[in-house]
Image (tube, rainbow, N blue to C red; front, top):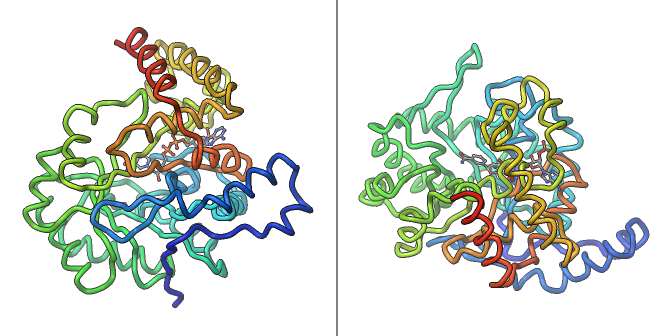
Length: 357
Ligand SMILES: NC(=O)c1ccc[n+]([C@@H]2O[C@H](COP(=O)([O-])OP(=O)(O)OC[C@H]3O[C@@H](n4cnc5c(N)ncnc54)[C@H](OP(=O)(O)O)[C@@H]3O)[C@@H](O)[C@H]2O)c1
């Protein structure tokens, strides 16, 4: 069984082949990536994991036909997207057992087969599913152990770089589940352990049992709740933060329109999400135009500006950015390098304060 090796530096793109294949502008971008890549890395919490500022988010590539699906997804397109992400220097992937009910992990494993310079692979437990495909929560020790074995098998690895509790549910089982993760780590099946969607109180409960390497919370300019208590707490306690949905699941990319939402397939969860429907939709699309104006000055998309806005917070280690195609990944990978100036950051915050207060 191939064991995923963690990378200390991002992979080096093959410049010769790329020169023949890609446009001049993209070539220059790749060259910049290669020469500056090693300076980008950020340490995740108390671990030895050295992360690039963005990772590849593998939720949408879980495919269609389950409760939180994003509609149909072609596996070969997902694999090409992962390969492009690695070529561009991204050195970690975030997935979860529940994404596509195991399918995302299978696709990640297929993509990484034969790849010489492996990225870190992070996955999650606690959301399980039954034979009728309905999802339920469990943090029972036996359930966590069973989930870990299934993820190791699907991913084709002997160790998971970061194993995270997906949701703190059922709340009464937090201690049992976290203790199970700590024990499995001692057995060498997990390198580091983290939590997701935990509040401060829940993190304190877990920390009595074992240190938390990282928190995975939702964070974008339209979901700022964690700024008040959670981010100050992680910063004060040396807990790394890898934020999810930095572009609000596609809303802030610059490619979302009312027509697109209306045409989404029935199994795209966003069809019914409040942020993708009126009265919020129009207001969100106006925000995107503000981001587009800032991005235009730098040749980057509104989505890249949105990701950079999250990375501006000192408590954020790195952002998880979802991608479904090579084209999407090529565009958002610019967030590896693009940073907002303090003035631009303040301009966005002022816009948010006057339009979203
Ligand atoms: N722990 C948790 O509870 C939790 C929850 C949510 C997410 N996550 C993690 O965080 C990752 C990222 O979050 P997310 O996927 O919700 O949101 P996101 O990164 O904010 O948005 C990703 C989506 O935006 C669209 N997109 C990406 N690049 C684009 C581009 N260049 N142009 C146009 N559209 C583009 C794609 O969807 P379309 O093309 O379909 O629009 C893509 O799936 C997930 O994959 C997952 O790993 C974790």
